[in-house]
Image 1: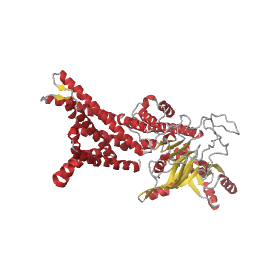
Image 2: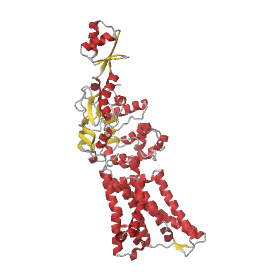
Image 3: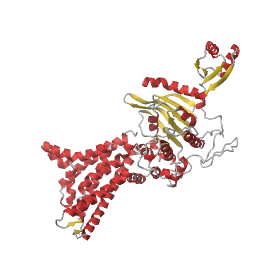
Image 4: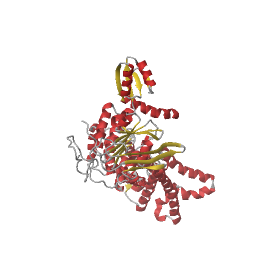
Length: 289
Length: 308
């Protein structure tokens, strides 16, 4: 278009500082000449990684779907703990027992939080906006993994607090819940749950489709088990590949063997890091539409 | 009041060089080269599926070109520092999460760009979204409101360049007039605007330059006036039949319509021929709109039919 002048020959603008208004040199003009575009805000700073994490975290909880997913997760945790105390009138429990019974349902719900964090924008085309604001896509991916992990951690911490609240309530009603905490067990359960969130994010990026990612995560342990039944060789591999099996050591960290740690390492590498790597590659190389 | 556009320094803001995108054997964008300078509002015109959106996605780093390149201020978009502070983008007004309020959508953008939160309210004012509208979820927005919201997000970073895909789509005539004012003012202050449309009358109302594409190729480009200059002349007389015969005898193209004759000869030529043949003219004018309409249709019709 440079070959076609937009206007009859008009005086060239001289703007030495860019901050002053445009001044036409030959003819005075009475119409308003406002400041040049791009001068209304302070000088631009690079987009910081922390800001991206903040925005990604906020995006996970600022929609009804995101908020309800967390509320429902906590409600289910409270219900299960309450039901456990109601029906299980055996020996005395401590709050950590109470907390550890929500680990199983959380193993299903937390990956969903992770999947949604990774895929929500793909179904809504909002990725168009995200990746024009921050074209360095690996930063968005890293921010989302970090934000999803933080959110998972908050949900887990809140359900741990819930265990105390419900245990205390049960004691008021004549129960006998002790408040003991086994530091290693608590740590192990935290890591276990965190891994499920990151797995959700990894599969979310891998499939870029919410239902497919959730089904894959739920089906994977079953596939390992069925494979194990069918073939002796697969059976031998299961402890090295199936996260459900490999993460059991986290419930008894002090007794864990080197072999178990190695199994956890391979299972995490195959079940989380590999899909995360392939998924990230898909997002970084892919066309955002 | 008409104001002479100011020529801004700073060179070309948007440049595409042999920009090409192929999907397998299908070529969506085919060797597109053009530049947009500060102070210009350029319309990117073409029928649906012509490759406008693909080209705009390549300009903003969302799609990697098969060959060629697109530059903003001399650099690829993905290399810009805080790009949305330099380039305001709206590639799809509907690409906003329907579960967020308009206010939240803009707040996220402000946070990401690192601009003051007060900017959110200013942008709502700029695009004319009220406070109560901003608190509604985007799901409940009309297309026109989504367009305004998308524009507010595009203006958020106080950019020097705007890249807008179908921004006028869904706006009523008042909305189109408002957008014209907004973008013209932006250009007068040294801004650079590229906006796409598949409707001629939309870009005609807003842009002063056109890049017309069809099937991924540029088929015309230049100033609106210049493209208008190829328009036809409409003439009515007391004896259209004789006039048409006389014009054809002189080597001009003539179409007879209910509203008179349409000819490619200019008014002076027709007037002289009418005079020479003693025919009384009732009307003689250049058909600007029709001419541009014809241009657009003729430029796109052949390729569209081939595609159908």
